[in-house]
Image (cartoon, rainbow, N blue to C red; front, side):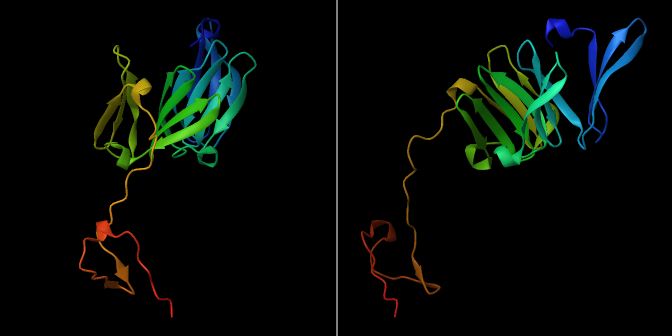
Length: 193
C-alpha cells in the first residue's frame, strides 16, 4: 500500500466488514471499523491516497488518509456480480474477477464491460486469491475450471455485429419448407389471417 499507510493493517471480519488497525509498539490499535454485511476478498492500491477493496457485496474505494469509503460499485452499476474475488489495475482501468465473469471498469469515461463464457472464459465463477499480474504484463484469473490469461491492452470490444446465419425457419411450430437453403432467403412474407 502507499508509503504513508505503512504500519496499518486491514482485517476482514467474516460478513461484518473490516477494520483498520495501526501497529503501536507490540499492540494493534483500532483506527476505524467499517461495518458491512460483507467479507473482504482482496485489496488493490488505487493511488497514493486510495485502495480498492473487493468484497462479497461489490467493490469499494477507501481513502486511507481520511478513512472514508467512496465509489461503491455493484451489479446496479453494471458489475457482472457483486462477489469480487480479484482486482488488477491497468492504467486508468480495473479488471475484476467475480462469481459471474470478469468486469473491466473504465473510469474516464465511466463504463463497465463484462466478459462471460461466450467470450472464452474457463467458467463464470472465479476463486479467492486466484489472480496475479505476470512480469510479461499478462493478467491471470483462476476459476473453478482452470484459468484465463490475457494482455488487457489487447482485449478490444467487437467493432461490428457478427453475421447472422439462418439455419431453419419455423412457422406455427412447423419447419418452413421452401426448397432453398434458409440462409439464402432474401425475404419471407407471412399471412397473419
